[in-house]
Figure 1 (tube, rainbow over the protein chains, first blue to last red):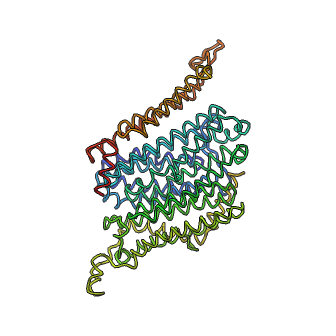
Figure 2 (cartoon, each protein chain N blue to C red):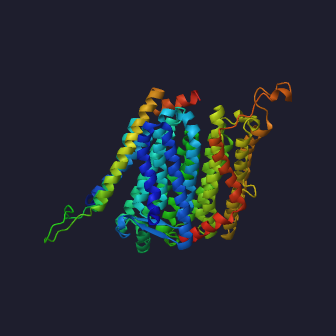
Figure 3 (cartoon, helix red, strand yellow):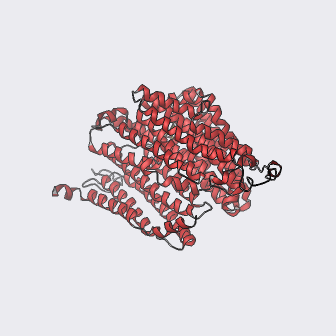
Length: 502
Length: 121
């Protein structure tokens, strides 16, 4: 049983996704219980895999007992568990949160199907992380994407349909490019196993087919992680998706895209490949990352809708993740991976907090948040913690990853990246301060003309329901926990980065 | 030059098909046409995989005892079965979303939909 954990983490949600619609026919609430239990089990399995990896190192699971280059191999190493824990934890928090939120946003009669697709989405994400076979990455990517298109399209407003459709077009183009790139790699090497590819590719580095494969894969992956010029599917998708989907997708989908990027850039290809090329791939990535960081932040400043603001801010934060990759050093990759975790908890709790406001008041405009600090103090406290963390205040997670990225850029002599990080942090402070100002320091509409303090007690504190409050707070508290106890994820990220760079 | 085109014509066809698909996705405003473009785009990759599995003089990979036979590589074809399934699922989801878009907006022309989104937000 313990030996089969790497495959169970995918098989359990996959089977549950089939069972849930049937269970939903008996009783709708049953579907939620199954989904919660399954995501919780996945989280526990991830923790147990973490323990195994820390004690014994890399796990290699042979699917059906076939030896790796011929059969499909599942690989669990430090990087895998790092991302796996983020995905399974956020998925679990998402299901707990979804109960009230989803009933309200998509209607109770559609919930069983929703949870089934949600679990397919999670299955795909975990599959990408676990597999050691490059074609499997494509298949799981499509499972998670197709589920993702549907999850976005079920949003309350009709714009969500258009957002889902646009994501479908972009996502499929990206996935097809990845498929084509895999085809070129297979054409040259005759293998699909990632470890085997890494062994066979070095002698073919100079061939134009391998260079083409790399270029095509890079384009496909950029679309999937929503790197700046090809990010256009992301803002509307996050804005019009149901709240819980915005939170879970922001926290997991692009992160797993970044994981696929790490694997293909550093395990399939290697820094030696980049060195053998005529031009500096790292510099191209660096420029793209810097543009993404600045453009994402600037676009976020100009938004009126809070969910759209958070979505554009995600575009900027993805820039940070790619920035760490482009430095191609252990510290840079550490910063990138830590930002993966940190952005997941920060953006997760921000979207969850906004979702609570949507649930109670149906408001998504920044103006509409006026006086919300009095109405929903706990939710807004969680929002504020996460917002401070996004800015990068010390003792929060945002500071840790920006620190590592800054140190890494000084180490490689690119001191000019420090102002970029500073300017972006400043812009982040600008757009979050606008929100925080509205929440805590401005009176609610209709109140400012009232008769002073006596009347304003009329606005009772109507907090979000407990099942939404607990996940929001838990994730928000993690923003501080991982900020103070940064050594725990940092040491894991360091080992993962060393494995990637050998 | 002509020799390169003629001996590897299947690869050229895949490139032309792929670009035609991509052009349709970008240039056409009708959502159904976009999906058709997407299908052509995906199908081009199928052609690429299948052509690379074909060996000159090769035959279907069914084991024949005794005879010295050259087999085609069956793996890319198997992979493409998966890719076809993926393509069908994407098309199904896309058409379902288009149907809902038509119900919500009364049109499947992209510019009209964007216009409506601009007005009543």
